[in-house]
Length: 236
Image (cartoon, rainbow, N blue to C red; front, top):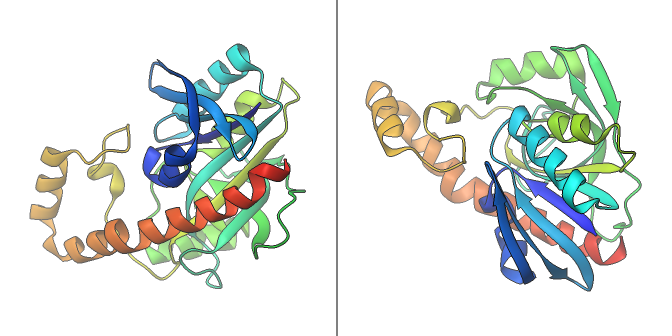
């Protein structure tokens, strides 16, 4: 069985639609669907936002279902100025600057017909939203993109020997400034109306960048990610 883990359903919404579901379940923050996708037995799961939730959800999946491969899939913020929205990055390694550690990822993926980038990923415990911060992190890590989950997935899987791949679709470019998504969304990846209202009342200039991210960048990134995974999964 392939286990594909994301933070929210929005990131893998097209795959969620296509899977032929035979079982559904929850465990804490984790929601999962088991079935068949493109001829492969698969578990699609959303674990919530952040390293801790990714680690906890992945640990449960490994213990209960023992997948043969895990794919951490979702959005990534571009650190490299060469990357554009919709670009796909397959991680060769994942970096934690806080721990000063690097963990290797499984990156020998059978999907050569779709163009993608390979390189290091950076996982941070908070949403990186300012261009100057992205520039600083790129210089410190040389990672192509930043996310909030890959480190947690790998950390949970390291003792099991199960290979972990990470596929990220660029949702915001290195020069783009975004709102602090932690001040808008809850831990489940859904908009918290009260938090969002207070946040945008304090700084209305961030409303337009948010709408661009939510209604333009994110759908494009999700579609690109689903297209790539649709090509990958049948060949795994």
